[in-house]
Image (cartoon, rainbow, N blue to C red):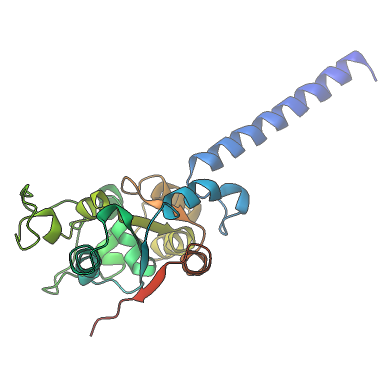
Length: 240
């Protein structure tokens, strides 16, 4: 091979390798990766195990698909019942919020709620039947008292905000499959900015979740793993 041909071939190979490396780096930057179906290589199973498998005497997971604000109140009630009623130490209780489908919106930041009109797109309503236009479930809606009295309505024990529940140890999961499916629905429904592809929207969502959200490949698969491997009891919340 001529030296010029060799150099040209080498240069082309380096470009290809560089492009592949950039693509791999981009995929790693998106929690769960950029495939429609998350691959094992894109899932940090070890980190997931550390989070959900921490030492605990009692473990409970709450699955929710249909969106309903009372979901978070039930998670709060479980924590209070387990700790104050049954007497389990607070640091020995492990609770997972396994919301998917429309309920995935609990782990979407206000940036996403606003940009993709999440409430309108998925017809999410509050207890009064009004359309929800932002993640009003994330932060406490009042100052939290330092009271250790669970009967104090303004204490941490009666607050149902996601941030407060996280402080109490609740782990909030986000379903990669749900994000991918919703991204297609958002584009098809005209809720995504013009020119964005489903992949663009999915990547945008996965990189703008609320702090602490843990992306899992498929929530229905994760529920099985949590029960079989980590011994979480199962609670499916339904509302009339």
